[in-house]
Length: 192
Image: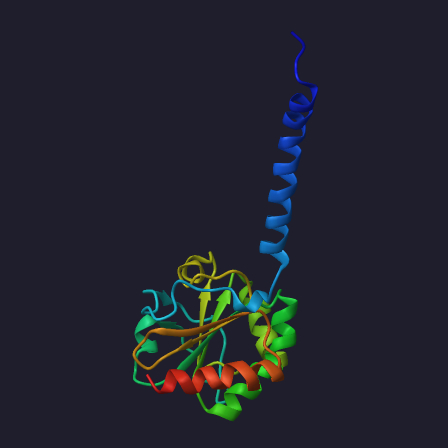
């Protein structure tokens, strides 16, 4: 009895067809849509427990050391902004003037998590571009940032006055993003 050649050919093509389908799905999952809208499982949850040391040698305009911070600093009844950044991050450099302006315009406290950075480079970065941060905590091994659900730098979190994460923005902010996304989310967090 002769084997059915049509069936045999179909079985040979099936793995290739499955592979092609999976490749298309993976492509659209990775590169489709806006990466800044990556969902976070932490939205609506209390900020993770952490305590970060100060960036050594960093002082404010009055030559007072800028402190580190902990999760306890983020539930004092006011909306706060937490920005994860690094001096080696090119998008962080592009975003930084926007972050400085956001702090000036809103008057909200901005806390910085310095991610896997060289302290000297981080101080130089803030010295050149300005320091919008009320406090800067160093995260040399990235453990605290991972607990925040970090995908990469820069990332910005809006924390409601009750210490819950109200919003997460992935990527560098622009003036348009601040106007259309960040400010409305800050307002929403203030109503909680």
